[in-house]
Image 1 (cartoon, rainbow, N blue to C red):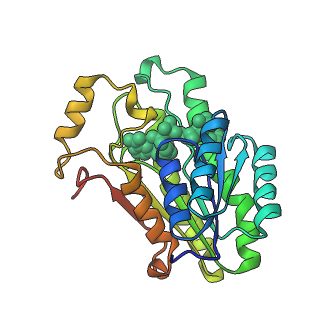
Image 2: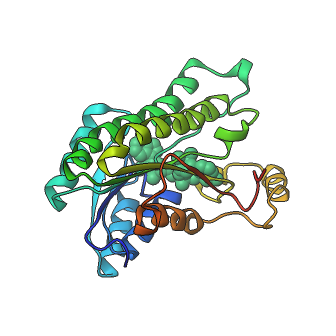
Length: 248
Ligand code: NAP
């Protein structure tokens, strides 16, 4: 229970990787704010699972791309738990299209949710972390932010942007005991990747040296490590949890 006494806020925690992160942080002893936009029932189930396991959690609705909603949901977590120590910027969407067909709205919405959302949440939570002079910011990017991907120029730009954003935040807040790191998942089977055609899934699996898709739990364990005492001296780094897909 390395995170006993800590309070975490995980964005997009109703489903997929965010859900896995919320459950793993709670299993390590943290109280968890479970953010979502539309999947209220799923978020309530995550909270229920944490409470059934003897933990504490609160479902907090809000669109990370709307600054007012972010301020409100951060306030809700603070009112309930009195502090926030760990922020996991996980909420993300895709709107894939080839470059010449990509609509302004597809570009804008992915940048708004995946990148601007991380900025809004980090800005809102950083005020509290600075007061506490301790904090862990963990941003969920993607291997696509490192390698690029045909049909995902918007998503790759947002995810690469997240890495530069994290390094800047890490430098700016380091002197106050706050670290900021990036986790880049490879291919994880969730609703986001569920729509991929079977041939695309097979092609992805063939690129993974460890021979299987990742799980939300695989990503969550890296997040728990970065939030915990073992990662005290690590900041501004990018860790790929991808079965070796992008090793160099
Ligand atoms: P997912 O299954 O589609 O779940 C997305 C989560 O984000 C949901 O909880 C959703 O909440 C929430 N969300 C979406 N828009 C939001 C918004 N505007 N404000 C707040 N929450 C919002 O996706 P996933 O596969 O778990 O992906 C999670 C993160 O990992 C994303 O950042 C993604 O880019 C990254 N990632 C995923 C993979 C992969 O293979 N799956 C690989 C690399 C990186 P609601 O359901 O309530 O809308």
